[in-house]
Image (cartoon, rainbow, N blue to C red; front, side, top):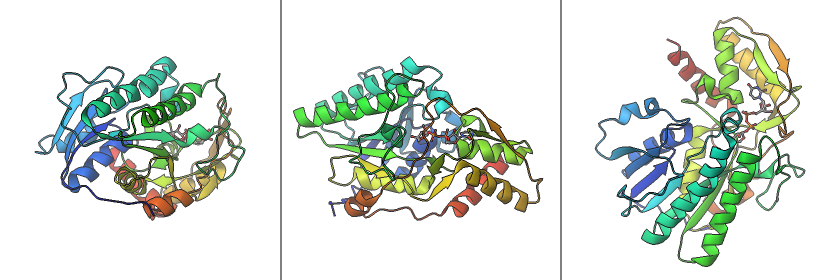
Length: 326
Ligand SMILES: O=c1ccn([C@@H]2O[C@H](COP(=O)(O)OP(=O)(O)O[C@H]3OC[C@@H](O)[C@H](O)[C@H]3O)[C@@H](O)[C@H]2O)c(=O)[nH]1
């Protein structure tokens, strides 16, 4: 196992702090006693996700787009940077593909420059989308992927791939620079709004509102869903490990989208609400057919694996959605 060394009371920068993952990571780091600076452009993130920290003595939120260098923001004394800033829902990252590419490439370039100049460790969040529509199943980190470089998803898939390539190039050129890469698989939980567009929040939001669930495609595509707390623990362990290559962070439990829709319909019906119908819409361009992480590496180098099963995670997520609609 690689060395996992918990750093106590450090100063940590989280980009994308007002996003779904970012806001949970900020809470987690503050609970651990760290001082946290959050950065967000509020393109898809929302200050409401951090409202509860408004007067927290160890938290500061800065409005900044990582496409722009960090000079003048006073970030020289940071110990660690988690780079989470990027629209992640397909409907969001495809809205302004040029901006998504800039966030991926210029964003990580600005972060690496800041890190290089000030000896800061960086964890970059990559994605299972670097595997594209995979022809190897499940996907280990050694798989190079099957990505369309010239299509609707390429702004994100290729953006995340070029960001990994830039991390690699910096590591080669500046061996003292500490870089960690997490390839995050589909993650869900409280604070992912109904309007986010990703499948878990869409299905739950619709089922609770009594609307039909909308499957895009024929429902045979598969995904593996990881609960937010497992993801955050995995990111934290990776940051504080000495492992320099990409690590999959995901839950290997795999479901077809139709199976998943049925689970949501049944869980919401068990709460005494009407059983909503399932409808079918056209499949989005280049939507991957299958996805499931091979987490052998994460188990070996981080001593990490997911602990929350799908039903338990969904109970918490449904509860959160119900509170939102009160
Ligand atoms: O309302 C919906 C949304 C999605 N889907 C389907 O559900 C599956 C999952 O779609 P999502 O939009 O939740 O997410 P995707 O797996 O396509 O992409 C995600 O992958 C991993 C992460 O890095 C990213 O956050 C995100 O890009 C797809 O097959 C999609 O077509 C629906 O059937 N209905």
